[in-house]
Amino acid sequence: YNLQEETLIVIVISSTGDGDPPDNAHKFMKKIHDKSLDTNFLSNTQFALLGLGDSNYSTFQGVPKKLEKRLLQLGAKKFIESGGADDQIGLELAVEPWLDCLYNALRLRFHLKLVEDEFQSVIPKSINISHLNMADQSNQQESKTNADETRNKMIPFLDIEPLKFPDDEPSLVRGSDSIRNQENLRVPISAQNFLVSSVTHELFDSSSCQWQNGERFPGMHGEPIEAKVVGTLEISAEGIAHKPKREIHLELDRDEKSEKILNEYDAGDSFYFIFPNPKREVEFILDRLKLSVVADQKCHLSVDSNTAKRNAAVPKYIPNPCSLRYIFTYCLDIRRAPGRPLLRVLVEHTTNETEKRRLLELCSAEGVQEFTSY
Image 1 (cartoon, rainbow, N blue to C red):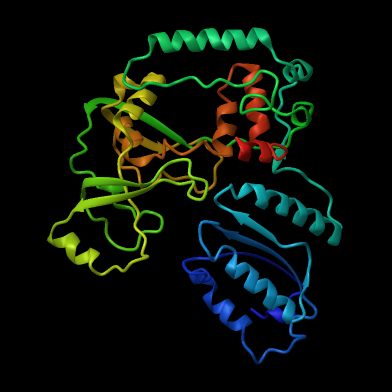
Image 2 (tube, rainbow, N blue to C red):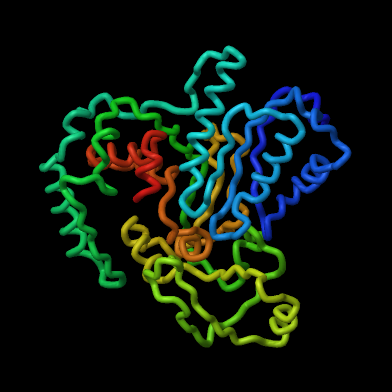
């Protein structure tokens, strides 16, 4: 490519390790920092820059800031203000406003008509918005009664303490006045269904299954090492202001193979720990979904022939066949806080209209701030 010939460029870049650019950006960063380039090398170029990072690292936004400084040195001008997203508080909080600004600037520059086919207003017409904006006492009482009945029937394998929310203040279950009065929320189109499953009468034997069906994990550098934790020590207590995350010292039982591999690492290197989801939590989900009866039987996954999803395929990290218990134990992240795409899916399966409205608010473009807060 000849960057100097481009009048407008859009760059999304992150920092890795100790402030290094991603592998696919090394060549670009080296070229753009060539000292032989004139100060007017990019005088005819405008740029829009979005930096991605994690504020846990001391080099947070190091590469994006360095690149922005260099582009300006070479005479380039900002098309819009640069954005900086932090994975610690949620990338969406910075990414989506930056994208809105970019799309609007592009529309004005190229005289494009505004076509919002990426979003749709999905508030059903049958829902009375004014009623939803007020505390619907009957629905809330009905939800409380149903929840009480569910807890009374619940198997004692997992204790769940119901949270109490204020009745007259914004919270996870109640939006602020500004968003509750919004009649046209910009909500992403729901994800398309593309998988179908079938269960046989045979039991599934997982003894020969590899972790993630032999697929590589994100960020994986070497082969997984099986190790047994033989001791733990709490280093920092929860709630300390300057250390919001727990720090735990782990002692591992090492064999000859793991000893050899671990000796190749130095202080400061990072490890990923892979472990199954807790059995009690998996059992709770299966019971809640009324799937416990078939949880250990062979489950076959295939692509739905009627799906409109492009390049649909069964995820490679899921063995096929497998079992529902195996999938929820080894293949799915059930402990992560639900993201906005998942909330959007839940909208399609929520019958309580007040709760449906709140889910729509939290996954909408207007509700990014509240989603991040709660």
